[in-house]
Amino acid sequence: MKLTLQVDGALHPVTLTEEGVTIGRGDQATIKIQANAVSRVHARIFLKDGRPHVMDMKSLNGTSLNGTTLAEPAPLHPGDTVLLGEAMVMWVSEGGPSAPASGLNLNLAPKAVASRISLEDRAFDASGSILVPHASLEAMLAQASGQHPAGEAVTLFQRLASMAGTLLRAAGLAELLESVMGLVTAQIPCQRGFILLADATGELVPELIWEEQPGTHANPISRTIARTAMDNRVAILTTDARMDPRFSAGESIKIHGITSALCAPLIVEEKAFGVIYLETSLNKGGFKREDEHLLSAMANFAAVGIQREREAKFRQRLERYHSPQVVDQILKSSQSKEAPALQAQRCQISVLFADISGFTRMSEGMEPLVLAGILNRTFEAMTDQIFSRGGTLDKYIGDAIMAFFGAPNPDPDHARHATEAAIAMQEALYDLNAMRPEGYPELRMRIGINSGEAFAGDIGCEKRMDYTVMGSTVNLASRLESSVARPGQIVVGPRTAELLGQEGLRQLGAFSLKGIEQEIRPFEVRWDHDSPTAVHELK
Image 1 (spheres, rainbow, N blue to C red):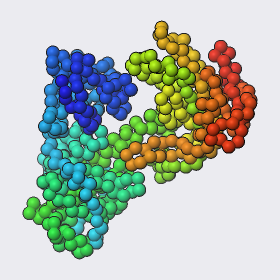
Image 2 (image 1 turned 60 degrees about the horizontal axis):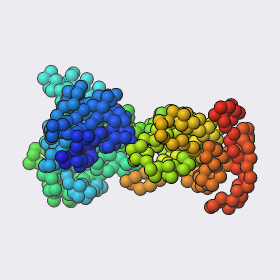
Image 3 (image 1 turned 45 degrees about the horizontal axis):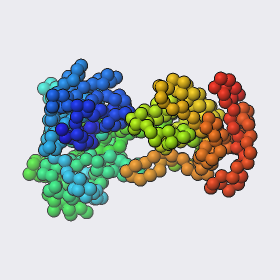
Image 4 (image 1 turned 120 degrees about the vertical axis):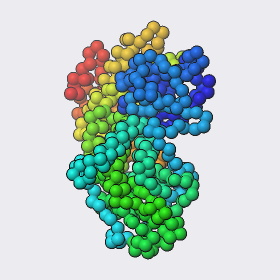
């Protein structure tokens, strides 16, 4: 049976069988999803009696179907909502994605239209408009209780409570933005709505566009209003933009008939990172003061939700490479006024390359699932040793691992930590071999380490960025692993040996390595599983 699953906002066409597909954040899952609350293999969707069913795979945070926690397999129908922790999965019918769980009808602009939306500068004069300083949600609720009739205050509380529940159920940033816009436009009549978020340079970029009549308009919106709202932390209400002197330099406002704009900043802990921007025409009555109050309150809620999703996504990305302690340090640094933690920079590091020797030859006769299982088990043990010493995982390269120590957070003992990690990795592999199932091959590993200056930072393009290191220090570490180290051996470069004080090391002969101009005299790290003296000598 062929069907389409919408998993965390992405569509996955699948051919469903009785074995079915699994969803989780681990490599074993058929469909992978990056979310902290999702287990490695969280849920399974499969055919039973010719009908799709969903079941929980003993996940940590549970699986629910339409709000009911699953204790046993249950039938799945188009439009049903499955939550894996907080990540949403839906069976999408042939007609397209179902409406959001909130039941709101979102008229999102087509991608082609969204890409043409731009911002233009227009003359700005604060006179003739209402500018309201940003207030925290607590202050706004207190004001509503004291200044508005009891009925109106209760209505506001109910609207915000409903919004909070919807945002908490959102799976991923894209769905959260759609939920925000659906809630806003359901409460405040308008022709167009935008959510603009600041990019890495501080420029406001439309992340989501809503139109009452999709595709009707592609005219620019006012960058001046948006920037003023965000930079000055004020909500802006223009009652008649066609007559407003601020727009004397923007004749397009008359042509398009947009006569009223309402904009509220997105602020969390005094940090503004975007705006919600609405436009409407005079024949709809324009915006009212009550609309500004409601949008400001809703923007407060939306800001918390958006910031939470962005930080969760950032943390998930960091956790692929760093130990939990390093992730916490990076997040703490990124919240301060210091330079971004992953900014490209030169730094002193130690680079480690590890390769399972002979694995390609051993894998020729293996079943793919058996091969993947061996690699996953080995990589998990090796990565734990890297992370426990503050190292950064750069990448898996087939049956090899590249890691480094000393970036993004400086580590004066990077050489020692890299070498101790290498010894622990050899020890862990020894233990894995001792416990391997009958018929599994014995694995041996070559490790090369080199220390020195390297370039570290985010490298790639807009669609895909990776935090990595480059330079001659990295190249030599790779050559030491591939051309010098033998199976079961750890080899370090001269600079690493110098930083270690050459304790527990044995100097090797001179080597001429490809791509390295001068001969290198590396060192072997002495280690023995039965008598690991090198571990003690390094500490």
